[in-house]
Length: 270
Image (tube, rainbow, N blue to C red; front, side):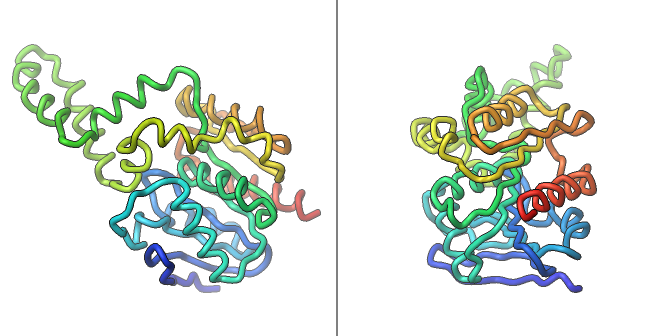
C-alpha cells in the first residue's frame, strides 16, 4: 500500500492530510509543536489493519494558515467539515497534546460520530499549580516582544557574571515556540478567560465514549496531572502510564503506542 498525500478546500481554508489502509478509520491529530508527520512511524504499524488518516490541523504544517482568530472550536469545526467531506460518519480519534484537546472537544460536541478516543498526554484541562508556568511562557512569546528585548539587553551583563545559561535557554525556548505560530496563538496569545472557557474539566462527565489515555511517566508533573484529570472525570476512560516514556511518545515509542491503539480498538470493536 502507498501512503497518499491529499488536500481539500474547506470553508475556513485548505487542509492537508496523509492517508493509507483499509478498515476502521483512525484519524490522527498532532501535537502543539508538530504536524501530521509525527504519526508516520505509528501508521506504519497500523496501516495493514486500519484506514489511517493523519491531518495537518488548520494553521499547521502543509495546511493553509488563514488570517483568523484561532481557537479550539475553530479547529473542531474544521475537523467536522473535513470528516463530513470525506464521508466518515464514525471514526476513532487519536490525539497528542493539543490534538488530544481538540479530539476530546470534538467528541463532546459530536459524540455520535466518535467510536473511541485515544488521548496521548492531552492538553485541555486545568492542572493544579501550572498557572505560573503558563504566565512565564505567555511572557516569552508576548507581543510586543518585551521579553526578547529585555533578555537580549540583560545577556551581556549576565555573561560577565557567569549567569547567562538561563537567558540562553529562555531565548532558545522562545524561538522554538515561535516556530509554531498557530500553537502560540492557541495556547498563549489569547486572553486567559477565552482559553479557560474552552477547558474541559467541567464537561468530562459527558464524555461517554470509550477512551484510552496514554501518558509518559517521565513527562512533566503538569502533563501527568492533566492525564489523571481526564482519567478521573471521564466515565469510560482508562489510563495507561508508560514508565519509560516522556512527552514525545508518538516519536520515541511508536511500536508500543501502536500496540496500545490496536488493543484498544480491538476491545471496542469486539
